[in-house]
Length: 379
Image (cartoon, rainbow, N blue to C red):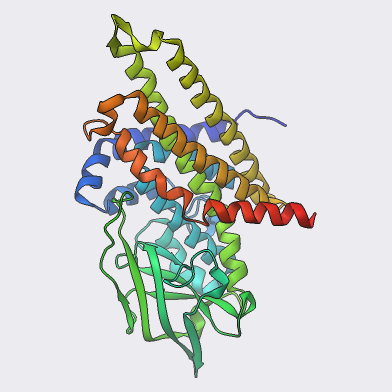
């Protein structure tokens, strides 16, 4: 049990930190205020290998581990949490194509996914099925050499902008066994998009409803086999939950760092507020809880890599703890900054808005508790 990072991990952690500092953080406020989707910047990140972090090397992937990815996303999120979170979703779809796709699908898409020439979206949630994902209603009916898709997906990151959509559809009967995964390209007739949602945070990435109206897709776009879609979706979410937890930790660590600097500069009652023991205790708790959440997240990442039987449970635990802790630490940082924390002149309020949704997406934290409890009771 070695808690130290190896030399290679420290190298790409430093590379991600440098990219976040130089390419993300200076622009994050503008992207947030003007709802700019920073595609050129993300393609710069892809040049460093961050577009296909755990994709195999034969089509340009970095072939790194889930733990490696957690280190990278934590650093990127310190620069711009919203942009880092979109990149985690893009990586999730690239992994689906690499792991479950045919050789023809891998050859068609993977190289361009790894460079982020093609951007991707993960389409599971629907207007009528959020937490109850297995109740999805979007259908794909076989018709000759094609599937014909009808239905809608909700809250889709990259919706309307992404080039490739990994869509969970119903090809069979009710329940998980009737779900399949199909790739749909942006310009496919019958594919349309709702208006860009106006959100509290995550403003550097578009979010829209994705609609299918007699949308005809070749059967060759089926990922895996019919009926395997729910398994694919849930496998992807194990890693996605680790990634979004890492993004929460990165945002929280950035806010803690800002707070440590602020309390040593800010003076009240004739001395820096860092000298007040009550604030020292608060800072100590923030740092301790972040470290605890980080350790669990890294353990979960290692379990996902190892395909451990308890990977899903650990990923749910880590996502729940990291996103709850991340939001709590960011909120504490805002309080430590007082009125200044509430102003856009400081980055705290942006981190606050961006991390709040992490407790909802990739499975709500209530669903994480349900996953954990079911596994405990089954064992």
